[in-house]
Length: 154
Ligand SMILES: CCCCCCCCCC(=O)SCCNC(=O)CCNC(=O)[C@H](O)C(C)(C)COP(=O)(O)OP(=O)(O)OC[C@H]1O[C@@H](n2cnc3c(N)ncnc32)[C@H](O)[C@@H]1OP(=O)(O)O
View (cartoon, rainbow, N blue to C red):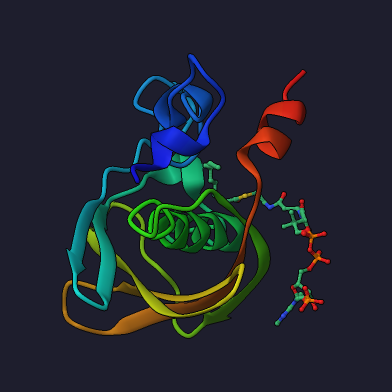
């Protein structure tokens, strides 16, 4: 069953998330991330190349830690769709291993690890083009009733 079939009539998932700070192509102040999804058997992966600017700076020349957490959250959230679930982040843990440079094409990758009922366990990494892993993350996402998501909208 495609994920859209879980949503209220007349609204697709993309329409509901159309201004997402992480991935909307029409949010002018968003990150406008685009992901490639791999859904082979048990291997569900989302990957994006991320090259951000001084607008996302924390330490001089490096990404703000909150932006890095956003990247991890967004990448892991992309794994829920191939699982045919609407889910929200319940717990996010980030290890900041090295400073993450701006103006550099970093690789953002998320993997689905396992599922226990409504609980979806994912991981993510942000990697420098030289192969250095700059940050890692673990995420717990909770599948929700799509009607709950709709009620949250004003
Ligand atoms: C849908 C399209 C969205 C597209 C945009 C995606 C954007 C990127 C993703 C996000 O950023 S979503 C926004 C940030 N997240 C939120 O705003 C979620 C706010 N939290 C909630 O609304 C509720 O907590 C939630 C709906 C996620 C779950 O509420 P519930 O009342 O159903 O569950 P609860 O909070 O009681 O916790 C569920 C289970 O998780 C367990 N749990 C919590 N932390 C845990 C942990 N760290 N490890 C293991 N288990 C944990 C907890 O013990 C419990 O276990 P049991 O059900 O077995 O008792």
